[in-house]
Amino acid sequence: MRERLRQCVADLRVHFSPEATLRVFANLWLRPHNGQDQRLTGVELSALAVAPLPFGELHARPPKPSGDFRIPTPAEPKQLGAWLGDVYQVLLAERDERRSRGAHHTDPALAREVVERTLAPLFKAEQSRAIIVCDPAVGSGVFLIEAAFALARLTQRPLEEVVTRCLRGVDIDPGAIFCARLGLFALSDRTRDSIRAIERSVVTGDFVTADPFAGEIDAYVGNPPWIAYKGRAAEPLARGRAEYLKKSCDAFAGYPTLHGVFVERCAARLANSGRLGLLVPTSMADLAGYAPTRRAHDRHCQVDQALTDYGAHAFAGVFQPAMALHSTKRTCRVEPGSGEWELARTDIDLVTLGLLERTKLLPRVPGASFGERGIQTTAEDKPRMSKERSGRFSQPLLSGTEVRPFQLLAPQLFVAPKDFATRLRSKEDWRGVDVLIRQTARFPMAAMSSGLPFRNSVLAGFRREPFSSAGLIAFLNSQLVRFLHYQRFRDARQGMPQLKIGHLRSLPLPTASPSFFSALDQIGLRLLQSSQDAEAMRQLDALVFAAFQLGEAEQQRVYVWAQEVGRVPAARALTSKDAIAKSGE
Image (cartoon, rainbow, N blue to C red; front, side):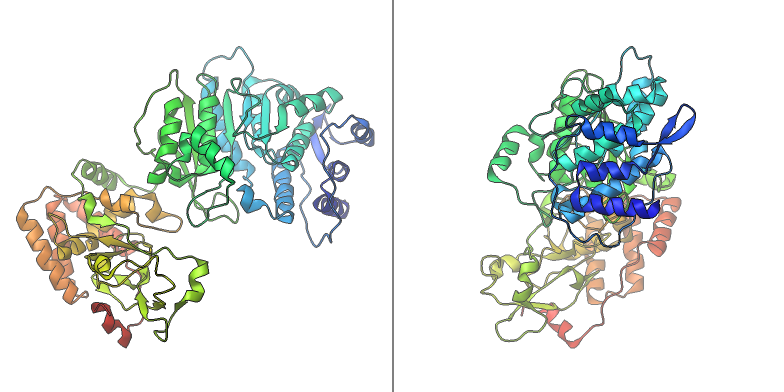
């Protein structure tokens, strides 16, 4: 049977036709019926084959070699979502569409948790009507399958009734709709009426422009497509589509993404007191670029406290922190601010929590102390850069790896000035930067600027009252500031760590006397001369601890973190070229 299934899946992979799919389903164990497990019978297959377009028409593709591909046979209905997800991912890979669609299969256990947390508040009071659940980017149907089981349990209604009455789904991909319909069909009573009901409830369409079920949905659940239209991973977007999104979606401002648009659309279209349960990038909770998305959502919905953070490995093969956005439709629309969403923390002790809460109330480091000046480089620039300074490659270009605490190493890249003419600032602009801060790091690491150009893996710092250049460098390299940054900002703890200008501008500033900043300057100058001066580092930490009035337990917590987590990565071996780091040449 497994060999037959393997061959059927290979056929499905090649053709993606109704016939091939039904042949696969002939081998599936379906739900218990009349006390016995039953397979889809030949009679039922024949009935489906003669039904008038039960799941729509999909064009067969020219055959291709099947290759070696195996998917285990589902042993029970609850394994159906995972099986369909695997099949759909293979189909996307065959069509080379996974990235362009931003489609990542959700593990059924994760989908189940999101669905149950979404629906549970709707059943705190007795329900007098059926709850309608919609997945606006249904994919292979894993969320709707989990919603079917959850609703059947919560309402004590038969599963067949839930499947045909309570579920809705939309997807722009007909192939996804086909998979989702088949999954729900397997859970239904498998009659012609069920086929027609599922066909009406799970439809091909563009949820962004038109939701066929708007106004009747009590809960939106799912994993909307993760597609960004700005930044290094930006996907192309047709001009007409871009103009439409700019005009119709507030969430498309700032850092424009398709998942942000889905969040706004779902929040606006929910029925009163409805629930939202969507898997989105964790950065949506706090990244400044997502502020328009948060505002657009918060106008319509009240976000739950302590949102669940699933970390960087929620999806197999995808290194992107994910969270569950759970919220409830407001009784009336409001005009919110641009605040961040709170994430649940299970990795923090009470001493650290108290320190974070106390320092949140302090003033902030002057915003003008930090800025972005670095050159944005891409893969296309690789031929324009050299690791040797020779010929036309005469201009040194600093990167983040050259920035160490109190120490700037020599640049390892050189570019041709003519190739970067439109991106290279004037010498005066580069010399106007006082401090260099490594951007690709878990906590601040700062050194004195040499006046050389640098890539965008380096952030710019400027002396502003009350800091001198040396004082700002010392402050950023202190253990307490590193600790506060790491504990406060999720980017430092998961995924690929990055410092952001917003992070630096929100660092707390102690309400200290001028003597504190004078002493900070003196210690900074000393460490700039010798970055390995252990006694000066001890004095620096003691000075900053006293300015922030840390107690013994808080100091001990910082020191433990510094030993276990906060170690500075080892530097590359120094070379004779490092001598030029202190010159502008």
